[in-house]
Length: 88
Image (cartoon, rainbow, N blue to C red; front, side, top):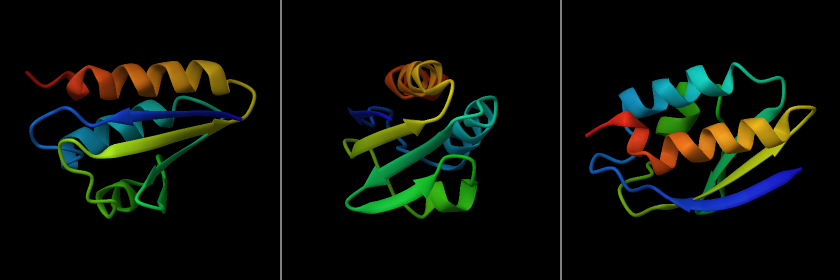
C-alpha cells in the first residue's frame, strides 16, 4: 500500500468537475484509490463519495493506493491534484 498526504491548492477545491477528473483517472487503474479527509474515507471511483468529503482549498488529503499498479496510480493522482486538476 502507498500513502501520501497532499494539499488541495485549486481555488474551488474538490468540486464536481475536479471530482469527475479524479474518478476518470482512478478508473484507469486496477488498484484501489482512496481519499481521506478529516477521518472520512472515499473511494476515488465514486463521485458522490468524493464530493461528500467537502475538501475545499487548503484541505489536507491523504491518498491511499493498493494493488498491482499502486505506484503508477499514486503518481497519477498526486500529479492531478498538484496541478490543480488542470484548472487555471
